[in-house]
Amino acid sequence: MASLRVTLIPVLKDNYAYLLEDEQTGMVGVVDPGEADPVAAKLEAKGGRLDWILNTHHHGDHVGGNHELAKRYGASIVGPAAESARIPDLDRGVAEGDHVMIGAARGSVLDVPGHTAGHIAFWFEDAGVLFCGDT
Image (cartoon, rainbow, N blue to C red):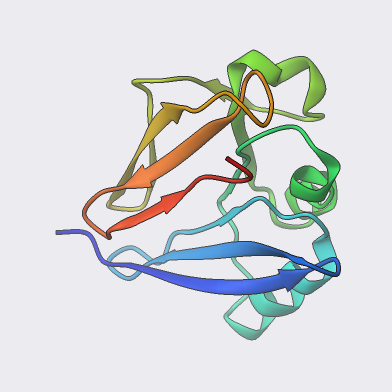
């Protein structure tokens, strides 16, 4: 069973990004980095590794740190395929039924339109966590 450690990172004035660390492999991801600096500070305190950036939707308070973090750490950006034209630097578009791996931790992609037409969520069942953005 995968062991996924989740750390909340306050960003902007009233949002959070979520740092995901797979304890088996050391692989690291972040969900919805609305700004880069607080995420980078937490990453540097934990060894300076970032493999994946996961976005639930295209709004700036969820993707604002993407470019800087991807450039600094060489991370790949994953987000809703339906919003690929609205998420700069998107490396992989995903939709319902797709999966993402943070090391040994498997996240299922769920379509959850409502807040935006292409909004998605990431469900890491073994870890018991769901990242649903603003839905």
